[in-house]
Image (cartoon, rainbow, N blue to C red):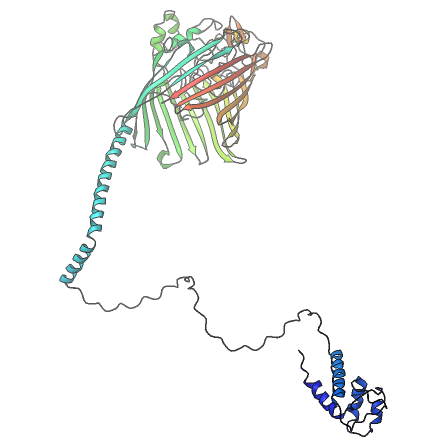
Length: 636
């Protein structure tokens, strides 16, 4: 509420000067007051404000006393005037800008202490202080007393620790015994091998073309002494005619050493092989040991497969997967501390060649002792060597066949590299050259030499050479694309190399009708289980590896082209051709494409089941042939 001390004092003053009834006009009341009167200005101001109006006769009568009524009238007009003049309170305005900070007030009372903050980083260690003076040494009695007190205080804990130590000693003894048993088992020879059973249809699937084939291998391998290990195994098949040990890739492919007519069906060549007619044979028998006489080296002595781990390259020069050889193999990795590996094998080219030939009922002694067959009835030596330089993610190698079957000589060079572009890639390539064939002939560089019983084809570019290679084009954990190509001269035809790998015959020429009657088809396992290199042909294709419902699958395609188009329609026998009833069948002429799709599934640990469909595409009027096969393989 407003304070009215000013108006009240003014009214009191007016009570002294105002007349009892003030009703004169405001403009004339003060005119009745003398101009020089000390109250003139006050009377004029009150009149102008309408607080006093004078008497009806227009006089002020300032010298007479005011009645209470007149005082109340004057007081009411004064309050009304003041109320009108005083400003009315409006709506709050916007906050003004903050004024400057005032002077700091006096410090308040100290508050309660806050929680302790995190410890700061440790400061740098101070300088090492001087060594203090040595304290008094305890007496022997004090030491004994302190030890006794500690032993008494921790006697229960010490008992527990001792019990734990005793338990640990027992566990260590048990563990040592178990390790000894395991080491003994590791050093003990183990039974190894596999069983492979296949069943299906081959040829014309509509006709009666079913087959089944059982193969098995079982052996024992392990340590004989601390420095000597060994292996012995036997191998067998349910059908001895299914094993192809011919010099060429077909059961009827011609190169019969003892046949007068090269066009004659050459099943007799089988009879020169110790495996002919056998269901079971000694497959491997060797011992292994290491020495450091001149340089660290590993030796294998006995019947063995010399290229099972690529010891002699990809296989164009030396690969005896078709049959183990008896001999001595040496492997010297990092020769004399270098990056060069050396591999050597020397042994027999056949197990019992001479005896087998001499004892056959059909053999003519005048033939096997003739000058053109100087082997007589004695065994034949086989020697091959290889040097390889390792460069980390690449290597280069060279292989020399010093003496193969009878007079065979050859050399080869290969390269392997691993690199990364779109994915991890591997590439390998091998080139090989035949220097001398099985009969001792040295083919020319431009045209074939005149081999007895063959026809010379002048101008035919046929260097006795071969090459093959593969490239991982793209590969991930679930997908892989690999390209493959090979080319092999008709004259490049050696006994133990990749052109004649191990395979079992699932279909014989003439069995199954249609295209199956044509003996120039490629034996199914020859290209389904091995790199395909055919004398007289060029092969190009690839494989795709992929997964379907966690099942590894593979699709493959191979295109076969004969490298002698001028002979494709010929009927003249040639030693690298196929002959039946005097007719020549050239590679790639009647079957020029190979297609297959397979899926492999592990049923239980150690047992795999594989389903395969394959087709050999007929050409030049020949019908295509098919294979539908289920296989089960157990390894142990």
